Image 1 (cartoon, rainbow, N blue to C red):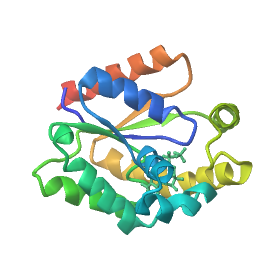
Image 2: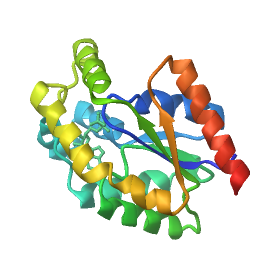
Image 3: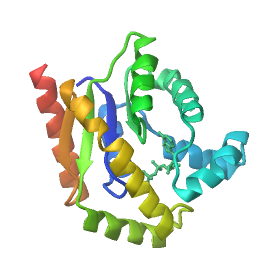
Image 4: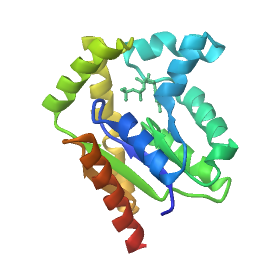
Length: 194
Ligand code: ADP
């Protein structure tokens, strides 16, 4: 199964968890832009200092910063034959940028997975996670901001990927193992069609 993948879905849909599981099964790295920003914030790097306030509010980091970071990460050896990108692209400009980054190495995306869940489930999961993890952007205001940005800027991107025949929609509600099994089955059926 070819594996240059993007995983999309609203906050709380379980992207990070499922991306890690898929990555292990497929033998490719899961690359989460949010995790990279958080690691830089914890380590107090210049990038971390630059994005700390922006991410705490739930706003998007400027595209130039995020694009350069993703370009550098995808250039690393472990991503040469595949990856699962989580949290990128998040707006139309980033879609164009990702196409360009991949085209520069003669590569292209194999599939874009959209993990779906309804709003009540998302809010319930995020409130629970806020208590467990204490992320700086899990305040009520930042959660609302992130869900709004997702609905306005990120969710519409799936239409463009659907037109390219890349979109795979998977229901994110249910047991973790069941969702992983659904994801693998959906990717296999997409692979069989090409
Ligand atoms: P979530 O999906 O739960 O909102 P992430 O861990 O994916 O969280 O991202 C956390 C924060 O990092 C975002 O709210 C945003 O500030 C920043 N971020 C992550 N990815 C991007 C991106 N592609 N473009 C701009 N900002 C981003």
